[in-house]
Length: 175
Image 1 (tube, rainbow, N blue to C red):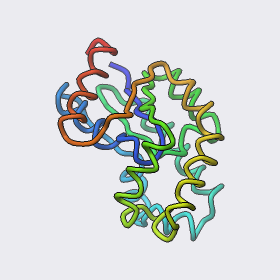
Image 2 (tube, one colour; image 1 turned 180 degrees about the horizontal axis):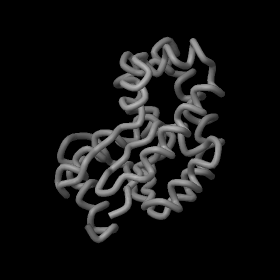
Image 3 (spheres, rainbow, N blue to C red; image 1 turned 90 degrees about the horizontal axis):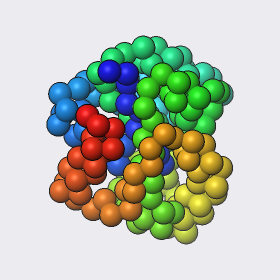
Image 4 (cartoon, rainbow, N blue to C red; image 1 turned 45 degrees about the vertical axis):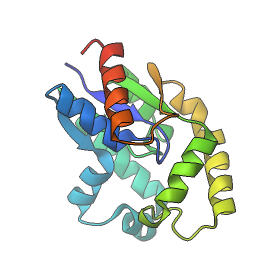
């Protein structure tokens, strides 16, 4: 089976739902952010600072090209990965793409709860986080919406919701 790519904004549930989807269906799970950190022995934040966004996005592209050849794998991408180079087209051509869709407000609420663990927003005020989500989603939403499947992640509040969402994805993809 070709790879299943889970895409969406920061806080949409890509890693938690993707990991459950893989476990429930006896598939391998890879988070591209963790893969990049292991490969380059640096945090995502440090890579951004040290090599700049363009070089970081090139690294992401190289990784997704490499992973696109894997079978029986669920791949949770970084939130920006689909939006650079030809990554979205590559993922649509080589596997099944699933967009975990949530409103700006739902994403804002989730990110405010975990902002200390998110380098991109840890130093922002709530109003700055709200603006960051809105402005970034305006740019990214058209790319995310190119996914083959769109699954609502609006009501993702706890582990039961994550399991329900993973099961819904499995049903939609006929796993």
